[in-house]
Image (cartoon, rainbow, N blue to C red; front, side, top):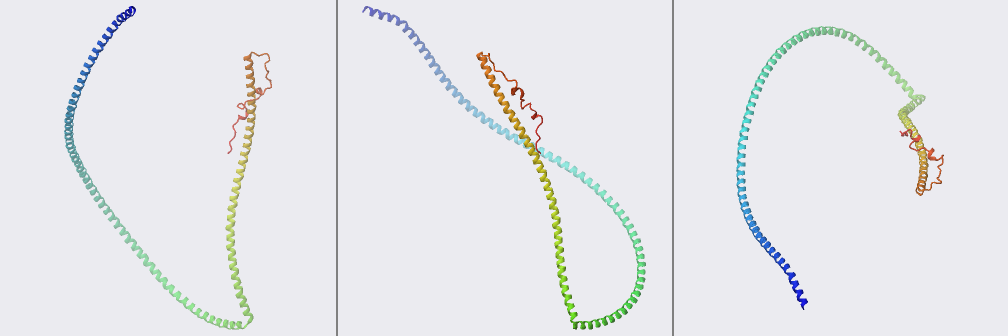
Length: 347
């Protein structure tokens, strides 16, 4: 029991400073809490006051804004009216100045027009005078020429009348002579017709003459047929000539096409030869490339073998490279003479 009492006393002695510290902290926290509450109340009051001031300022701003807008509308209307008045006055001034300029130019144009009209009338008067003089001269020249022509025509008429009288007398004599000759030939023609009629009557009675007439008619028919055949033959000959001309043109076209074909064959032969040459060169290049590839592979293997020996320290029996190795004698296709001249492209 004594021991337990002493432990309680010790615990009480130890707990006393802790309680004091807790009480002190509690008091500090209480003071801080009171300060915070006071600050919160002050903040709320400040917020309410600021909100009220904000509303007052907003109301004042709305009033000022309405006044400013109203003043702006009034100023704008006043400015618009003043501008309208100003531009109206300016427009009237410009229109008046334009009107004055137009009147001025109109006066100048009328003055120039009067001057041109006066010049035109003077020129017209001069032209009329010169034209009258020319007409007068032409009229006089025409009258003189007409008088000369009238005299010449009168002389020609007299000569023609004289020639007409002489020709009429000559033609009258010729008509009388021709009338006499016509009468004579008419009588002879009538006598000849009578004789032919008698001969025709005799020929009708002669059967041989009838046969000859029939033969003559048949010969005429045959002659017409032959003429038609000859005409057809002429048409055929003309057609043949046209065909010959077409044939000549076709032969010329054929020769031209054959020449072009031969040119194309020659070009194809050159192209084939060039293709064969390129194929041969390609085969040689391919073979050289294969050889170089083999040599490169062999050299790579030898290098790997040498590296392996170097790494392992085994250099007692190195592999000798043949002096006649293709790597020493074979040229690379890059330095080969095959590429000394570029291949000719086929035309």
